[in-house]
Amino acid sequence: METYSHNGRDYPPYVCPSNEEILRRFKLIEKYLIEACQSLGLNLHDYDVDFHLIRKVILRTDQRKLHYLMYHNNMRMNELKYGAVMVFWILRFKPIQRPTGGRININELIARELILRVVKNFRHLSNIPRKEFTDRVKHELLYFITNRDISYDNMTMLVESLAA
Image (cartoon, rainbow, N blue to C red; front, side, top):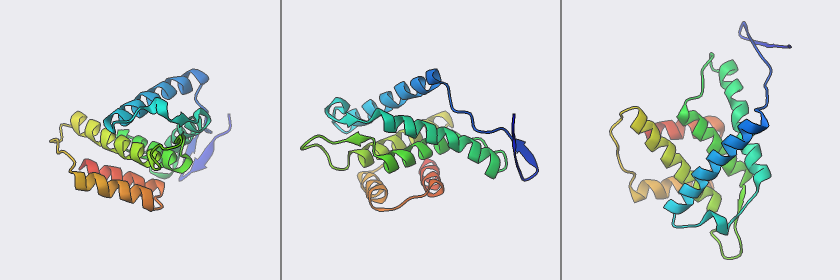
């Protein structure tokens, strides 16, 4: 098997997850999307979800794991980084399409809810005292992810700073 060398280390080539693993992640993302919509008072089934784009979100997020190993000193992605990269791709691909009269910024709203969920879960697992996010923070976060061009790394820094 061919390997890639970087900084004196050998890395295996990227291997796409199996169809079973993609389906498992698909179901998990669907669960997250439904919960995000419920917290917004929306019903995901009222929107058109492009499953081809969700698959691309899954694969691009998975590919980033190898990037972290190679270019960040063998670092593994924690829950915050994984969630940030997934949100990054949701914002790029916009897999949820609004029907006539639906929310224009549905992908951004769901991305914000996913960020807040990942941060809350991380805080809980890390025994970091829970702080509720104020409406102002939620509004500014939505504004930021709607109106700014955010890189992978900036998205990761944003999510990690919210968790602190």
